[in-house]
Length: 505
Image (cartoon, rainbow, N blue to C red; front, side, top):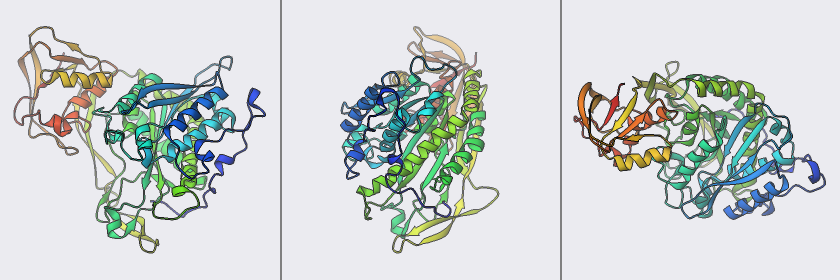
């Protein structure tokens, strides 16, 4: 997964960069992040992060502000630091960049900790020139309950990082609302991944071995041109930039839990934030850096200083790369947003064998000696797609309307309610079986038929901006369909007419 290691900057090096003074703050010392103030002995609390964002906003009035865009399960604020051009600075096209950290709360805090230092560097440090062309929105603490409860999930024990189809949690709903509110042109979602997987790979005697890996938005229904630009232009450049900075980086390899598994790239569904963020045409990227074993001994608490330096290098590289490519990115985003509704969409995607090679060699570390050992894995990094369909004019939902209406509201999808019974010709579908989590779901029959649509049915016009999303949510063949969750799949009777009809007008 990673090549020859290079020497990484020593702990705290990036945090110790000489800061460039701005305006009246020319003689003021740079404020320490909560982690730095604690001398890297523990992670920052949600309260400390909130107060630090307040301090940054006070430090740069007119440039920085703190927004509260939601509340967690336990009522903690979900906060964004917004850095935008102050009044009087040259106007012109600006790229909006969203940076998100700590969706996994206390389990993966380094991204959020790094964002606090990045915010300082943008306000009055060496990154300040980027704000001449960029508006930057930073959400360093996307899961404050998880951070303070020292867990990966939120207070309801739900993984919010995979909740972007169901939107069952206030944190995931708030993040979707933040996407609508800030409309980013580029987004980076920061994560860590444990190399010690106690219940799986470690039982076979191995640790994974990587430093940083990146993945792009890759759902097949996303705009084709942006996907191609991200995969063939931005991703290689970003990997090269981070590697040149001393941190070996690679294209994302899905989690390895067994030496006998096939390897793939990253998840393909809208369940994760990376793909959801790209629905609006944005360049969307995930970064994942190494989370060191908690059993090892380090100079700082759980090696947090080095972990933050890894994240900081990746985030700085992302900002530098999108700034350098801002005109091309903006052109891609504007084209995606101005395009008419698609006539066809690909609903299903998975991974299969790579035609060029049957296996790929990936280095793992032996758990006992920590020696590197190359192992051969079946190479299934080839994306396989199916079920490309014509987009109908609308969907009509005839049953379970209360629950599905709430889902549409959470996703910001517009609909109308039939106020009286209607006889109408629609396209009906019958499914061979209930959808599973990731397998292909096939229709055994599709036909146009006159149908009586009951009063209270929901009509979802697919020509609206969220029309693409609505089809992906409600067609069971979609890899991102809500009907792939057991509680929704239970509503489907195999062989009978599916209660979501297509209006072909």
